[in-house]
Image 1 (cartoon, rainbow over the protein chains, first blue to last red):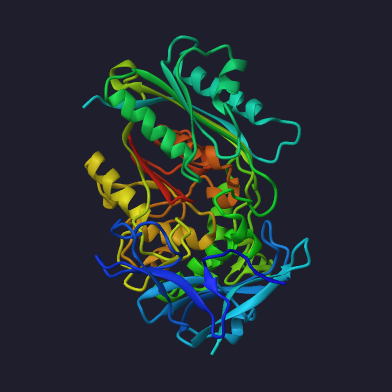
Image 2 (image 1 turned 180 degrees about the horizontal axis):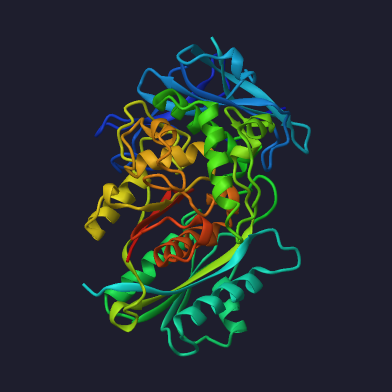
Length: 130
Length: 377
């Protein structure tokens, strides 16, 4: 079976989407969902799906397994800027930093991480060059 | 307002010490600070202990060993700024008239390797997003883009601090290095190579703070400020999953520095020596910008000018910084303050900043927490 690394962060459809909030009071879009707006503390911001496409703002490569991680290395981590004015930290499907450039179009994917103890395929969100 | 002075400082060297406990190191540092201040049992009314990995009642265990308990003993955790948070609380209590003498110390034995932080949720670890060096790498890359910083600059920060650290008997690394050696070490997270990252390690530091009239010959604590973050920056030490493209919130370091300059009635131009957070080489350059030691975007030029090297206009990290000393979270901020107290007393031998009378220390880390301390003499 396919399981999300954490429920409520993203949808696993085709296409997938990150689940964020939009604050009616201050207009800010945020990820992940929270009980109040991160920026102005207004309660119960509106749940929204974030744009699936954005542009690359920063990127690097993880070369050694970080604490608690059971997947493969190396893998990319970066920041993708979405049209609604939000920058999201995400895994990247590209782990060669030389293959990426600032501002290049990126698209959301759902990627496998590892198999858990029950044999489930654990998946998470990642951005790939579009 | 009641003035506060640092009446004594003490250190346990920073490094790796198998068989020496967190308590053992705290005892060494506290004993030395009390000795310098000329005080003992019954002479301080409260103790604040910075630690992140020490566990329950770290401070109590140290003071129990010394037979000095009964007063409030409070452990303080604020990530890399834990010692700065303890110092702020102690100074505020004296200024408020609650106490006249307070012991502040920090002691830490960090796990080896990449720091596993309970800050991260289990799913973040599982997804590979609990990689602290990756966040440092992303921040470093942005600094390269916004400030014209190159890998050569990053390597030269390491060479500078390791040269300073070679003259510090309390540092973990007391050997100089070269640009070639730094760039020849393996890449951990682009653009950062292994030698550009500080080593989490072990150590302790202690200070005795007193009401100024009780220790008039001490170094004056002109400001001790702690700030957290205003959300907005995706690469802030608050380590969010997202931020804003319209990223115009001041960094926690800038918030703390602005408040500290105001509290002390001083500005960056008045400083003679700085100890700042250099968890990685890019962090030192970013710290210089956020503390106002140069214009935003001006940190590469500041390094190029030689100003931040010993003998320059404003030496930064004359102790060798965390790149030479390593980083025991609870002790690192107070270790900086101990170095600066000694600098202001003119006790630092070959790494002495001549004529230093105004000093600033800075730590910033997860939370976000940023601590800025200003000392004068």
